[in-house]
Amino acid sequence: QVQLVESGGGLVQAGGSLRLSCSASGRTFSTDAMGWFRQAPGKEREFVAAIRWRGSSTYYADSVKGRGTTSGDNAKNTVSLQMNSLTPENTAVYYCAADTTKSLLLKRKDAYEYWGQGTQVTVSS
Image (cartoon, rainbow, N blue to C red; front, side, top):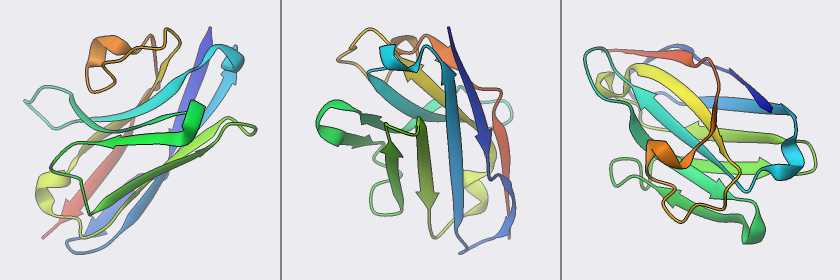
């Protein structure tokens, strides 16, 4: 089992920035990649970003490219998501997820076996 805890959410004004963090515990040695997803009210959970530990490859949703950066410290079992130039459309619960199967489809929700409880991000206009 892998346990994930997100932090760093909150209220931010449009145009501002926020840094989310995710701390993993448990069988973290089995984790191959970490992902970030978000779910706005009434919408499907969507992919935001991911990082694969081997080679530190990163992947981003088109809507995030240029405004978001994910990074991680495998030794500390932490991953972060820096988001800039936020808009009210970015308001959502942001989730951290862990993949332990070396999935090639990190933009899909079903690539991840473990999920955090989420952290609320609210962007005011």
